[in-house]
Figure (cartoon, rainbow, N blue to C red):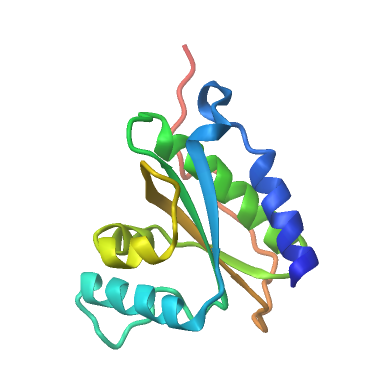
Length: 151
């Protein structure tokens, strides 16, 4: 998984970032089962279902954090997470966006402190990554899901 993770991080580094301000973003790779469990429980509480597992049992959670004063943080974090998911799936790993769990994490400063984020950085987005036994079948996708007009 280490080699695969390096490729995922490289994909994050290649993401388009607002104004090219890469210094406004930071990645934290969380593999510690205790910390993962804590984030999972906090997210379950936020969703109001203590029996749920919003981290889906992933062995690795990659947190994207950004500086508080960067108003393009969510757009850039979206690009970073998207690149990471594509890189993971390209290596036959399972991957998913974890915005809800990230929001729950952000509301628990004591857990955020355990992640040693750089000063002034806050959790913005996350990706769960791991081996999967799920078979992803090719499917037809309705290409008219997003409205389009041309002027």
